Amino acid sequence: MSAKGQELATTPWFITPLLYVLLVLGLTFQSTTSRASFFIPILSIAYWTVSYTTVPDKPLSTYFQAISAWETVFQALDYLVLTDPYAEFRLVGQTESPLQKPFLARLVWGLRLVAAPRGVGWNHEPKKFLPPHPEPQSRFSFIFRRQIPSALISFVIFDAAYLALRSHPGFLPGPSSIADVGPFMRFVNVLIFATSAYYFLDLQYRLFSIAMTASGMYRPDEWPDFLGSWSEAYTVRRFWDRTWYQKMRRWRTVPGDLIAQRWIGLKVGSRGCEYTKLFVGFCMNALMHQIADYALRQRGFWDFTSGGVWCFLWCRWVRLWLRMWLLRWGGDLGYEGQKRGGG
Image (cartoon, rainbow, N blue to C red; front, side):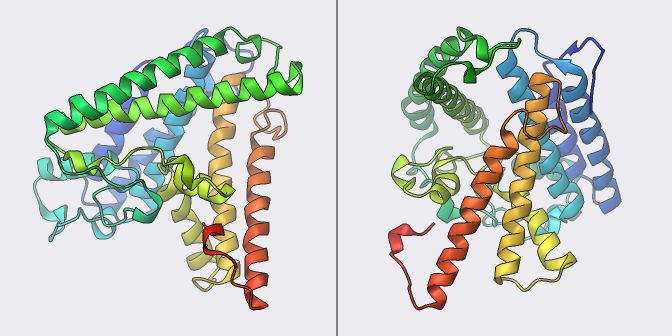
């Protein structure tokens, strides 16, 4: 994966919509082989986007474009290759499979599935990990009293944080790094970057919810907040499982289930099965962020220490693995622990 020595083209604005269109179209096919074949152009376009294009003078846009493209790749791997969507997924209240329905009905069904990566409104929704659903209300109230004011707040905070990032050479193309300053300013820089990412994600979600609710495809009560409450983040695992967004949960867990249970044959609920699934999930997450890091710097894809992504995510995995092991070990000794410490 390298475009070394070549001038990078400008990333077309329609790359992300194109990938989603291909994913939705792939879901409309009744044949397993036909559905799986759509994974090839999705993977190829995402590879080209990361390796041979960039957003000039906007490194954060380049990074988020890469993240978006490869999220779609992994979502397509789940929906088109590893899973039979018509057997696996059901809308809440759906009584019959759309497999034998007309093309247009399958198209709408596929669009709704792709538009709900967290599974909200579907049989695979991980309800205990998501914020509560909004109260039933009119579309007017949801859009103009809830989502638009919140979107404006998110836009102002994101824009301010982004302007602060643009003023720091460590976040711009060139040899400078955010590590060139002292520990306190390094912490401030990382905090500003995290703030920009947090409110950018929230802004995207609220604008999308406005569009989908106004179209009539979803009800207002089908849009729980994208990010959970900070009061839930009293352990590292609960921060990632409940406070941070759960958009990747489905496609991070499916490959782990496949490898641990079908390929290796580990018993569901066993320690080996849990550790294997945790390991595979972190590898998927780390790979996506490593790809985005490569898109940003266009060097060192196989140098897993150059960008810090793998180091950070491996520390997370080791920490959670150690916690799981200690809890299991304590359980074997008869210690149940405090309920609030779970998650």
